[in-house]
Length: 174
Image (cartoon, rainbow, N blue to C red; front, side, top):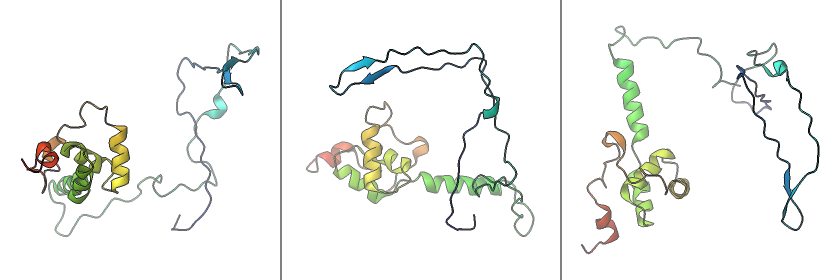
């Protein structure tokens, strides 16, 4: 909204309705003595439930869409000399490669903490090279993943530390 600070309201609506709706009613609670107890209440559920008032109808009159949510109204003009065949696709691939390349300093910092090189590269890419703390949190949350120590797809991230093995980092006298 033009870089201004403002308030916003977000509503979640249904675009389509499934043929069946399952609702779980949680009747158990934790008592003051930390034991689970069941609420003794009768819940009457109607056979038919009309949720039409929750159907999404798109932007309403008077609403202003956020810039990220606004539909693209103009296409980017072609560069001088006319459109280049495959030029836009090549630019997107280069941008994707730049995003997918892990920061080697971040990878080295994570490896100093004892994590494997491939896992550190995956963490750096997953958090967008935002920092060691975020990458370490990602690593700790994904230690159980089967592919956490696999190389990144497409050979991405084989920068300065690409020639090092995990054993070389863990045993520098080797």
